[in-house]
Image 1 (tube, helix red, strand yellow):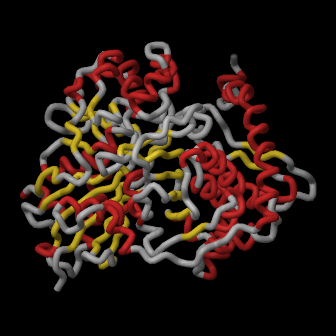
Image 2 (image 1 turned 45 degrees about the vertical axis):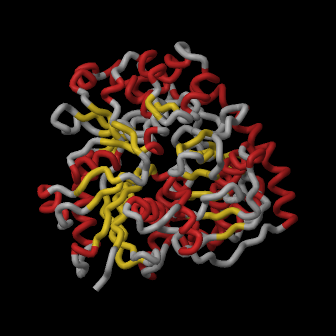
Image 3 (image 1 turned 90 degrees about the vertical axis):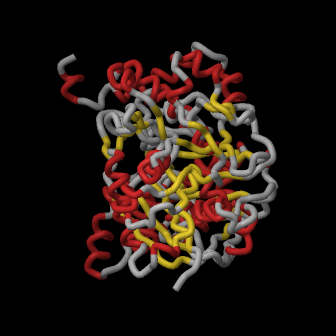
Length: 515
């Protein structure tokens, strides 16, 4: 019989992961329920919010098998950020959610840039103007789906919708609000300056509350759907960027972490936002009122490695099926056969446009340096190195505020030793992981939920609950090599910028052929 358990959900890009923790941070049970990602024309990426709810109901029931529902002291959330889900007056979704990976609103982002000074905007929101954010996505809906916007009563994020389905309350937290580009970061309130400029009522934005606040309690209807006890408190939680920081143990000025999943980001926790002069990085609102989380994020980190596996590693995938092994292990054996620099191959991992450091939705992937004697091992290593080199640029952008003596690496790709070695050598800093590297977002949300019901005093408790594993030290000669390679990597990107838009017109053969 367990006392006072925490049920933590992480609404990710491909599924909802539910984890039950005890008070000491130990995993009692976990379950992942998958849902669809809908890739449409160009840079359009959507999800059906009903799929989110079905996944949460399923994962909750599965994860609680053998657990008395009375033992669940709190339900709490981490969730994908920067989306745009419109709800009508009844609280029902109006169409699909436009998710973080969607970059269709580049035109709207540029339209916004003509209406407000970019530097002023950055110092209000903590973010650069970009098609990545809720604001640009909402402008796209206003321009292209006016009938949908006319019916919109609230605009919410993924976790906020699920909290609404559980409690009947429509709210968001400060961290998710800070990822919309409509929030005043330092005042922690919706920016009337920005809502006025774009012509929307602040009323369509949900009340923003602290991440540790109880948003409501499980309703009878939600209890029937999920198996949770009616009246169970639901803490709003935070966006996955902030949950990952806490789950990574990044709660003080001396900490830094790298979350390496489908996307990847480098984050820190500081007493004030970091106003990076070139606006290459940005800031989330942290769960403590006197802290911010400066970050820089790239679109396709693990996604680039997934593309590599799906398109170029069929042999390893088939072999793994026969051996009942993980294909990733076979791929990494291949990567290790190629030396640093991949025998002259350079890979730009811009398969989904890019956020940090370039903020260019039109950026595209590239493989430079192919020769007749290039091997698959070289291509594979170049892909791994390309992600690391892009992250190194973000690391350098955050250098003026960086006090970390080591880098904590978490997320699905943190399981890879070859990845951690490449990161250590590229960054020139020791790399460590811990026992919650795969569930760091859930774990961070669990800490927040525990704080919300008084189980934990503050986020620093996470440091007493994590167990760090072996440290990977950088190899000096490799560090020097990657330092010399990085300027070439940056030059290649800048040389290709003018060609990205030109190449886009050749994406659709039928249109070009008949032009």
